[in-house]
Every structure is written in C-alpha cells, then in structure tokens.
Image 1 (cartoon, rainbow, N blue to C red):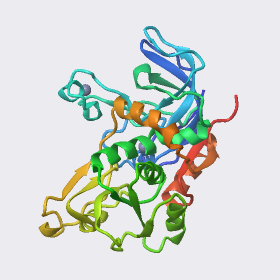
Image 2 (image 1 turned 60 degrees about the vertical axis):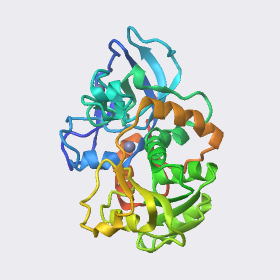
Image 3 (image 1 turned 90 degrees about the vertical axis):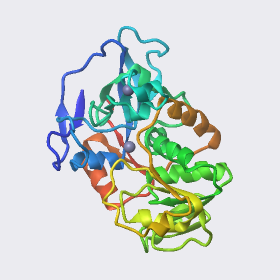
Length: 330
Ligand SMILES: [Zn+2]
Ligand SMILES: [Zn+2]
C-alpha cells in the first residue's frame, strides 16, 4: 500500500510505500476510493492537537470498499462500500460510553490522528465504526459527509430547533449544514470573512437567504449560530447576533483564543457550547437522512500524492466546499 505520511509536525506529508496490512480481530481492511480533507487535518499537521501519534496517516472522511475482513466481524460483506469517520474506536466501558455519549469517551481513538487514516490506498478500521454507505452517490461526493456532514449534523442538533440559523465560516461543513437546515424549513444566514463576496455568492447559490461579513449585523436576530471557523474572535460576534435565550455552538476541535467580552453578551440566558466528535448514532441518523435531503456536495478532487497541495489550498481558502483526495488506480 501507499500513503501520505506525516512524520513530523509542521512538515509536508510524504508519499510512502508501506507493507500491506491485515485486519485483526474485529477489524476490516478498506481499499480507499476517496478521502476528504478536513480543517482538523491542518490542526494535526500544525501540531495544534495534543499528543499526536507520529508517524501518522491523516484523513478521516474515508470512502472505500471492504477487501479483507478480520475474525469476529459480523454484518459487513466483502466489496461493500463503507465510510470511516473521525471517531475510530471507543472503550465501551467509561461513564460516557455507558451514558450514550461515546463522543466524549475517556479512551477513544481518532482516525487520522491517533490511528492511521485514509490518505492512503488502503486502511484498517474497527468494523463497529464503519458505516455502510449503500450504492447511491459517487465516492467523491460522499466523502465530505463523513466529517463535515457529521459534525455539522451534530452541531445542528445542539443548536436546537430555532428557525433563524447563523453559520460562521462557510466551508465544507457549513455548505452541507445549510442544505440540511433549508430542507428543515429554517432560514439560514451565512457569515464569511468580511469582503469575501465569492463565498457569499456561493452560499446564496445554496439557498441561503442572507450572506454577509462576520462583522455585519444580520437583518434579524438569530435563534442560534454555529461557528465553523477556528477563530475565537467570532464568539462575541455570534453572541451579539443571537436573541435572548439563543445558542452559539462552536463546532471546531481547535479555535484561537476567545477574546474577553462584556457579560451582557451572554446574559439573558444565551448559551455558549461546543461540539466534540460524533456518536455512531449521529452517523447512522445523518447518513440515512442525507439521500432524502438530496445533499449536493461541492468538491475539488486531487490525486492522493498531491495531498499537500490540497491542504495548502484549504488553508488559503482556494476552493468552495470540500477537497477530496483520490488514490491512483491500482
Ligand atoms: Zn474532520
Ligand atoms: Zn469510553
């Protein structure tokens, strides 16, 4: 197998030939056909997440087909198309696992961060954390659903039922969540970098009613806002934009420091909360719903050996929607 490997923080991934791996008990091997690129991959590369396991193969929006099945795996078939998300393993016995909050597990493994991920021609996964994807939709189009879609979905659940939803940072996750929220009958307000007319136009093409800069006041007070950009300065701005009792959800795994702000922005029972990871139930619920909603992902494909270019383009905001890596045909 081949993979793009991170051996040292803040250095480029390296195209590397590795020995083929065999699935152990409870595991499957997946021949990767597409893997999305997520902002979290940049945080892993930049050394912004604690205790990375190096060397590591990043990538946690994996679509592929099962080509080997380890002992003790049930319910999955050779050749079946599956998706592998960020949450790669949980302990099953900690208070969070036992309390239906496995996303907060005390001893988890995360794909592409603490276990090898999908910037590769093949990957090994814990079979219990692989989602059957069926045959509807292309591999590339489905890949962004595995993190941008899933984390967006969990953020939307935590944002509550409010009709007026603000999205700060209109990248891979927001462009999917906007479609879900519109399907649910909500009004969506997209906030981009000030002056980013191209992204505001992209948001409007997806049915977003209002799009403007993050420094602008929306025309109506919001019921809830989700912050996808890793920018702490957005927290007070979003709190200012939500009504009394409104909610602000921080969806990222890492964010720059939040500046101090007057208590009045939080008062009147506004809530500020974060989203961490996902549960398997989130995945099943969202992936069942996605085909009904008819989500259309905007993707830019890169050959897997050009992963560094895809990551640089993500950092620079050079495309709309999501970047997806495609391994060479073998
Ligand atoms: Zn991600
Ligand atoms: Zn646990």
